[in-house]
Image (tube, rainbow, N blue to C red):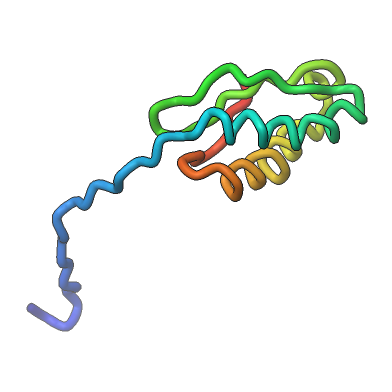
Amino acid sequence: MSATETAVTLRPSVREERVEVDRDLLDSTLEYIRPALQYDGGDLILEGVDEDGTVNLNLVGACSGCPMSMMTLTAGIERILTDRVPGVTGVNAV
């Protein structure tokens, strides 16, 4: 191998084991978040959880038209859910 070539070592794909999302813990964590949204005239509806751990939420009320809703979703709701609920990998607005 010359000095300009780079050695690339490929490892076999290691499949991460997925943790199933505990729906009771997810629901209780959403109930923890809900008052902050309701205080500003909004709310959320859990639409479901994908196989990969993505939580699908519908933001309603004042949250549905708020220009900051995506910031709330990612910086607030997603951070709390991924910290508190094992298996949650992200949040998606539907």
